[in-house]
Amino acid sequence: MKVAAFLAAALVAFTSPNTASAGMLAQAKQFTGLHEVKHNRRLRAALGINPARTPWCGHFVGMVARKAGRQPPQSFGIARSWLRFGAPVKLAYARPGDVIVVRAGRGYHVGILSELSKSTARVIGGNQSGRVQLSYFSRGQVVAVRR
Image 1 (cartoon, rainbow, N blue to C red):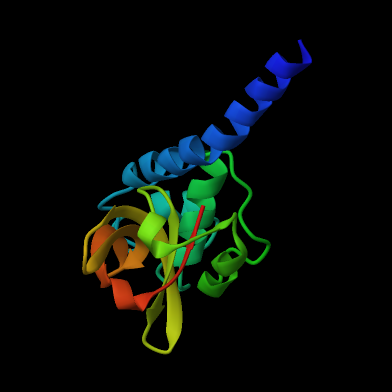
Image 2 (cartoon, rainbow, N blue to C red; image 1 turned 60 degrees about the horizontal axis):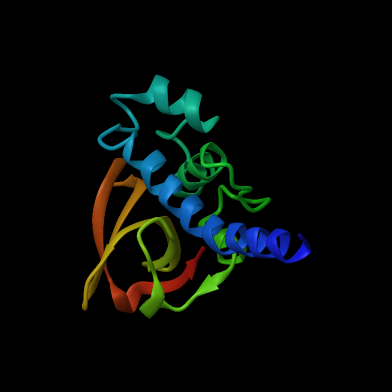
C-alpha cells in the first residue's frame, strides 16, 4: 500500500509541471490578438493595470500563471522577476508552455514558449507590439527558461 501511494505521488510530481506548462500555453492563446488600446477594457479587467500606460508582459504572464493554477513571483509585473519562477530548465530541454525570459534591448521581456527551433523561440506574450501575439526571438536572446 505504501509503495503504491509513493508511486502515485511520484507520478503526480513528475507530470504536474507538464500539465501546468500546457495549461499556461492554452490560457495565453485565449488572449491572442487583444490590443492594449482597442481591447483596453478587457485587458485592464484581466490584468489589473492599464496596459496602454504600463509595461505589461510580466502582468500578462502572471495572469496566465494564476489561471493555470500556478503562483507567479511576488513582483510578477517586472519581467526580470520571472527569473525566479518555478524550476530552471536548460534551453535544449524547453517545451511549449515553459516561461521564457529574453533580453530585449537593455531590459527583459517574458512570455510563454510556443515553439522552439534551431535558431528561434516562438513566444506568445503580452506587450509584443502592443498586443498579445506570437513573436520570434533569437535563441541567443533567451536568458532563462522556467517550468
